[in-house]
Length: 419
Image 1 (cartoon, rainbow, N blue to C red):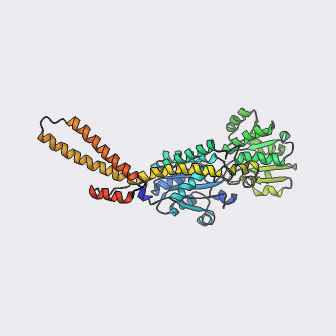
Image 2 (image 1 turned 60 degrees about the vertical axis):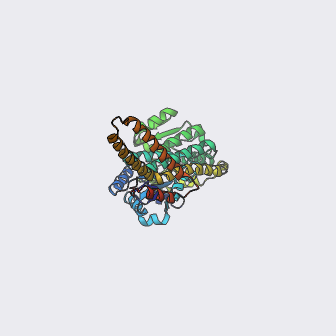
């Protein structure tokens, strides 16, 4: 977006893959844990990438950033994950400039979520932007864009019912249990992993099942104990995992590891066991399905469950899209001002040069020259002139490009470096 003076690079891109074309296995190949995300950002800085935001969730992995060519961003992703360029080309998408802006608005507003109205993604985007800013990888354009997307997300959440009821993978898992397990309040439930999805699942389990036989296990025990304390639940040591699986009727896995944490060798009981894997990459090995007593359900299966609530939410999509267009217009109006901001700045500098030259002349000619008053008056005049030109350039009825060229010609302004 060179013409808008927001980047030294030529274009703003959104590259990535999502649940729409990439299954859980492929998404797992491109998922980024915290360390690999930091490595990607460091590599971007070394490669001269000036600004980008990286998100990686169970449903998608995306990079939003400036580059001369999208392959620069694709290479960053493939270098820091198990994914290959060939895999990426089969399932991925690349959006440029305005299409990339529109895509981020839809993602951040929950309209592109696997479960419509799931707003957990916006917190991921906010967190990613904060990390990029700390690493000096967030230019004014992307920072302003992320803030606009956050604004749209908030408005959609408050002004529509698209998120009525709980809308997330964690809620979908509890809903699935309700639909498939009888007498849920008396079943033994083991939640393995207490990260964000695990915490949300735990809260939904307690709220909707009225089950008091829920056990938590996490590799870091004090994390599980902190959550258990809120709901008066039992916490067991990680070393007791196999024993607790044998005691369970339902096992929910949300460990967020890069490889399976559960396989068939950990399952020693012959009684029926429902396993829900809420992780990307998959944290439950497919070999558990070799056991006749085990039923394995992955989050992709959960998202395909439609209910009346989900259908009702679709009715609110048009209003949500209207809100997005309103906020996006505000962003694009700001972007348009960036187009002429350097020219206005150069014009102001030119007028200041005129002022300084004239003040110097008057100092020599007038012994009682009131410099303070002359400075004040001339600065006010310069501000009024530049404001007048700025208002003119904002007028939708005139050609901004033609006006910019005329201003540069009349005032003999030098070519400006992008800011």
